Image (tube, rainbow, N blue to C red; front, side):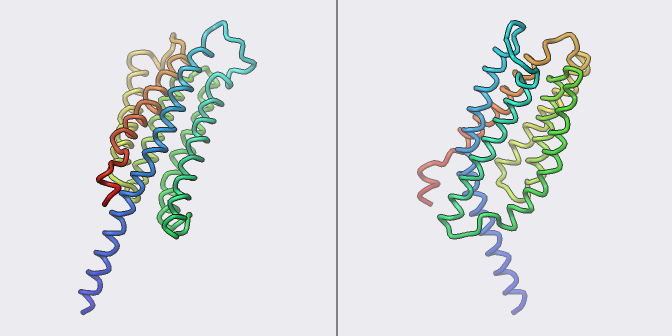
Length: 212
């Protein structure tokens, strides 16, 4: 009798996780679209700001601050989407599942944030490469609390980050001799921009999925 009750409880939990994973995938698609769109816009604007003749009062305004704003706005949009869905389903916004996911993601995100100080030597391309790697690690850290699509996105960022760091070191001597700010914007636009846009297209809710 106990085994049957436990089996039913496990089945209920599995169904709940599958349902929430599907819902989160549907919610994350618009958030990824916003984040990808903002990243592409920031990359295009950054390429203009990275030109030698651009009149910018501080170097960080050319790279770090615009990308910090993109990250902040994207995070706010995702939180608003999750909050809206939680209210619709009459569930608490900051659930235990979300807390565990955040705890898993925060260390890698903080590590990427501190990598910003690599730019003291003008290493914006190296900084962007570390950001890509750390973001991939953060997504993979939440793999137990997210749908498979998030895991695949994390793997794409992880592989891209490793390739950028290795390639920059082997072929470009840590990007020395290049316009690192220009390269950094290209890296960010190609990963945070295109990867998220591709993710949004692949996971956008279909009518059949909504009906079920």
